Image (cartoon, rainbow, N blue to C red; front, side, top):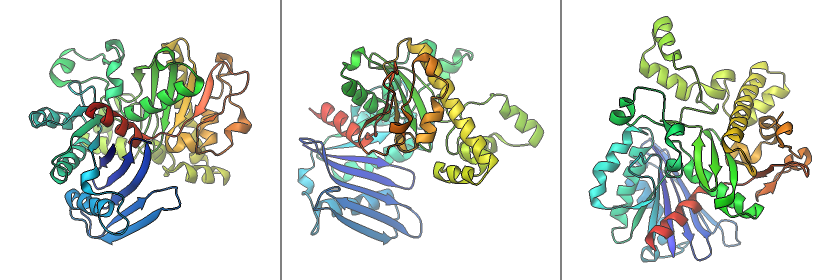
Amino acid sequence: MKILVINSGSSSIKYQLLDMDTESVMVTGLVERIGEAQGSLVNKTFPGTDKQTVTELDQPIPNHSEGLRLSIELICGGDNAVCSIKDIDAVGHRVVAGGEKFCAPVMVKDDMWPDLKETERLAPLHNPANLGGAKDAMELFPDVPHVLVFDTAFHSTIPPHAFMYALPYECYEKDNIRRYGAHGTSHKFVAGECARLIGKPAEETNIITIHLGNGASMAAVENGKCVDTSMGLTPLEGLVMGTRSGDIDPAVHNYLAVNRGMSIADIDTMLNKESGLKGLCGMNDMRDIHAAIEKGDKHAELALGVQTYRNRKYVSSYMGVLGRVDAIVFTAGIGENDAIVRQKSLEGLENFGVKIDEEVNNQRAKAPLKISADDSLVEIWVIPTNEELAIARETKSIVE
């Protein structure tokens, strides 16, 4: 079975074609700057093998439909084609928010679109593009099943006492205000991989998963099911991120409105795009922050300290939630590549049985790596996430 996975963003499209008989990647690609004067498309065929070829296009790409059409031409046409369009058996789509109605992957049916449209208010920056990309793909592939895989689905098992906010109950009944989380596809994937690596059934394993990238979130996974996560109604809550503040006093909104005359829209923009690491030190790339710290930049040092302290607070709180923790997993760009952030995020937890092997932690590896000390009571892992493979697996399961 060959499955095309599509992640359609506001001005970009990421895609992969996978052969699910071997779970190998046949094609991967990225379309960027859609709608701008000059767009780009990079298509890689058979990455990681001797037959790898790279095709790059630089031209105007007016809309997502055109970007997807160009991508399909490269996959299924020309000298480097890996298959015909008839060989693609299904298409899987990433969608950020499913709300309470979509708590599992679904095969798209025409009568779903009104309900899917309702989810856009939960993720106004992401869902319109995700769903628009699905519609475009359905026009190009009208005869194959299309499956929507929701980032929030893995978090649908969180119990009410963990997903409810202490607001008037009508805010939940009328406005659906509650914790939904995000990055669920990534959390589910690495939790499953970790259970396999430590040799325990997922349904008997308690794991804390830490997804650290420009966006960051944490999840408490009890016996294979998510019971809490750091992101909330939106991806703004929780950990300190590249440009997002994470947890703050809710009264900050009113304080800024009264004392600085800021509008709700201005405050929302500040918290989402001008805060986090960027707000503290002017940089949101952790590599730049480390370089600045080496030169004595105190703001960069503060940003690193604030972020890793917040990580440590969440890890310790989720240890309390789970009671027994078999493993802690780091994943995503920072989690997989930044030994300093990993070490500082678990610093001081030795009395709880969490001990990193500093020498192993400093190693670079593209494969899963166990970084806990021999006498650590909790295993600590670095596991590369693979959301595309996770979406393809979910798509295959639904189709079959």
